[in-house]
Image 1 (cartoon, rainbow, N blue to C red):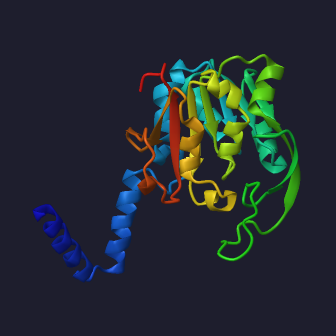
Image 2: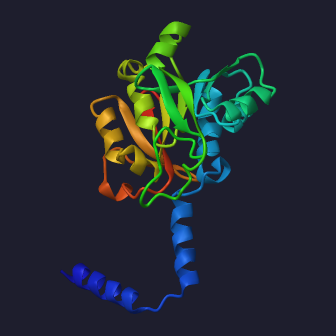
Image 3: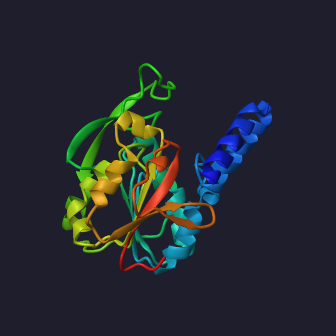
Length: 259
C-alpha cells in the first residue's frame, strides 16, 4: 500500500513538473539509446557488437536484406574465413553489393526470401514489400516499385546442400516473420543457431506484432534476447511493454549457443 501511495505521489509530481521540450526530448533520447532503439547504425545499436562477439564462431552466415553489403563487410572483418550468403532483391542495391570487392566465399543473390516462392512487387524507396501509402503514412513509399524474385530459406538451403547456418541476420523492413516461416523446417530441426530479426514501425504496415515472433518460436529450443548497445537483454517471455513499435533488433539463440 505504501509503495502504491509513493508511486501515486511521484507520478503526480512528474505530471505537474513543467518539463521543457528540450529536456523531454533529451530524456527520450537517453531511454531509446540505452535500449538500442531507433538507431539504424549498427555501430551504435549493438548489432556490430553482437557480431564481434559471435562472429568468430560462425562458419556460415546469411545476410537477408543485405542492402549495400555493410553488415557482410563487417562480418568478414570479424571472421575472414566465413561463408556468407547475401540476399538483396532491389536492383540498384544489388549493383552496389556487386561492386564490393568481396572474396569468393561470399555468394550474392539478386532475390529476396519469404514464406513462398514466386514474384512480388517491392517499393524501392521504402525498401519494403509492404505498401506504406495512405492515411498516417510518412510518404516513404512514394516513387517507383519493381518486381522481384522470391524464394524460401528452406528451398535455398536444400538446393545448395546447406545443412546448418550459424548466424541468420534478417533486415527486410517488416517482412522478417515471413522469412522465418520460409525456413521453418531448418528452424524446427535446430539447424540455425543464431537468428537476428528486426522489429519496429514497419511492422504496422506488415500487420505483424512482436508477439507473433514469440508464437513462432513457442516450444522450440530458442531463447529470445533484445540486442542492446552493450549487452543482450534476456526477453525469453513475451511482455506487452516490448510492443512499442520502436525500431530495435532481437536475436533468438539456440540452446546450444552460449550467450
